[in-house]
Every structure is written in structure tokens, then in C-alpha cells.
Length: 108
Image 1 (tube, rainbow, N blue to C red):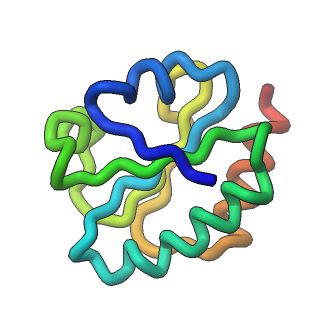
Image 2 (image 1 turned 30 degrees about the vertical axis):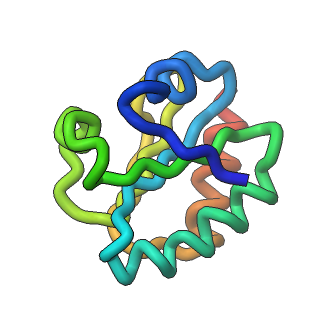
């Protein structure tokens, strides 16, 4: 299951998380974001309890979108210990996302 994050809960849910976090920056009007959403849901299920998977609507959270320099969506940011450690821009295959998450877990 994915967690919806926003400007109110981002610091607590993402930056202060004890486990790695993947944040999907998306918007409702974005076609590739809808395709990416299926991948995000699948990896959320596969990595449940080991990685937190979150979604952030760029239209509703402009300051976070600007803070992280999001210029294109979908963008996935991978956080560990409150820091961005990896990024994927555009539609990314499930295998590529899962591989990145597995590497994060191996780096604990």
C-alpha cells in the first residue's frame, strides 16, 4: 500500500523514516504517471515493511516539488536517512525500480 505524503507530513513520513522511502512525484493529468502508478503499487506490495512507498501530488505540493527540483513527472526519489540517494525520471520498469530498492536495502 502506498502512503500519500504532502507538505504537512513529508518531514515525518519521509525525512525521519527509519527505513528507506521511495516517493513518486506525480499529477492526475499526467498519462505516464498513471502507468507508473501500477509499478509503484506493485513494488509497494513486494517491499511492504522493508521500504516505505509514498506518492506526492506535485500540483498540491509546490514547495516540495521546487525543493527537490522536480522538472518532469513521473519522478521517483529514493530517500535513505533523510537524504536523496537515487532518482528515476520518466516511466521506469518494475524490474528497474525493484533493483534500486533492493540495492537500498543492501546498503543499510
